[in-house]
Image (cartoon, rainbow, N blue to C red; front, top):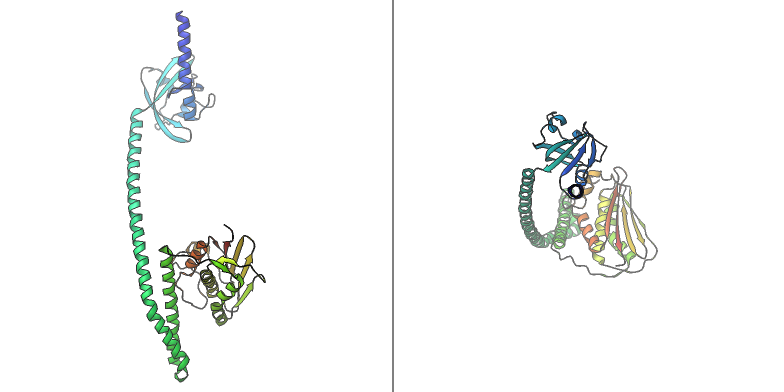
Length: 374
């Protein structure tokens, strides 16, 4: 009876140790070869029977590991650092028992180490929560500052528009009415005033556009538009600019195109900005090609120049406000640095995408695609 009970208890104990227990259990040969493990040991160490020796699993900092020494003290637990497969090593208290010709090794987790790790994780979690709250507070402050910046920018630009407009109007009047009676130096002064006024007006207009976009008041007025006419209209301001530099504007477009729902004035602004940018970066005598592609699902505009191109490290600056790239404008033209930013915002508001392809010395192509279906 006692023999049967001992067998049953032994079987139940082995099943528990092998299937459920959270201890490392190894059956070792006298030389340390691993003959058998329980599932927990195999899952934690990634070691299967017959693959390694037990000493291969021990992280021995002092090169003092001795299986013979450990088996001579079966009542004493030994703290060993065990390699945990692909994870960090972990400390276990091991006890070794000799049952010739085998050695049984039982390893339990170091409770103090687990508690220390638990406390460390709690502290790190608390620090993370504090940092998250601080970040949320800073983000709120940043949004408020950004709103105030946009409000100030819009007010300042609006107040500047009228006096700049007056300067531009009077300079144009002087150029038209009395420039004949001026000497060369006086006409140069007046031309400088007019050009500076034009630049300042463009700067103010761009500031107002950016302020409106970031303030969330960038509404679209979508109406059916003749795209061919829209393209031609958008190029009018650019033709004089191109003619002054001897640059040819080449248009590639279908003969006819159905009307599509767009905000005509904003798409015209985006196209004008992109073509103007291409002209500014093109050498005199080169060509800027504007291509229109239409199909039933997409409308594609492409602006390609023959300029110096953009180096790879400058690509991420193109659509950031006030960022300057190393690509120089060929005639020293001034710019606000906001044209591409505004164009991208307009295209994104139309649910479109914009892409830039460029290689140094081979020019730049900017393509934007507008979906025609929801």
